[in-house]
Image (cartoon, rainbow, N blue to C red; front, side, top):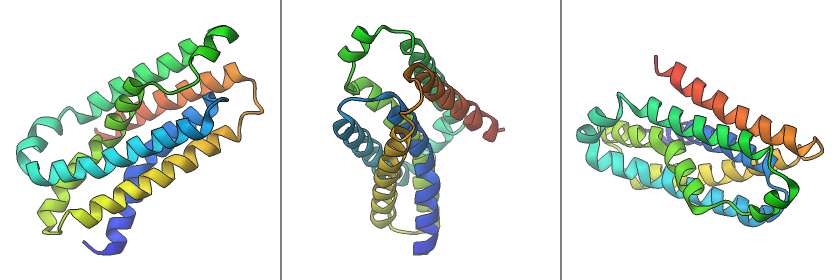
Length: 184
């Protein structure tokens, strides 16, 4: 793989993380720096890690995960989107208690947005390219694309919060259906 191919792959793999981060940027009004950095670091790390795992496990994992990867991502994103919409109806007091992204949410988002990267690692293995450089590029591009998405979502804060949370949830659900339809 050429460096251009690796960069294009990294950008393509980071788009899901950017969209999810955008949704989170719409929702969070407090602790934006911490939330954006935690989310970007986690999705960036998993986007680095999954190609490495895929590279070393190659076909043995791919044949088990590939038929279901779109369903796994679909389910996670629909649940997260539904949670965003449900949370939009909480009172102001409840919102202030949840001003940080929780660990389980970050892990779910990180895994859901990086499942495709596992398959990319398998593909990289078949090209004969060493994995460290592509995995680093994928992780770094995802980190910055996630930050860009989060802060881009935050710029839309002028809209009423409930509408933004519902929009964020609908974006996640839309992403879930996009992933599902692309698999057919």
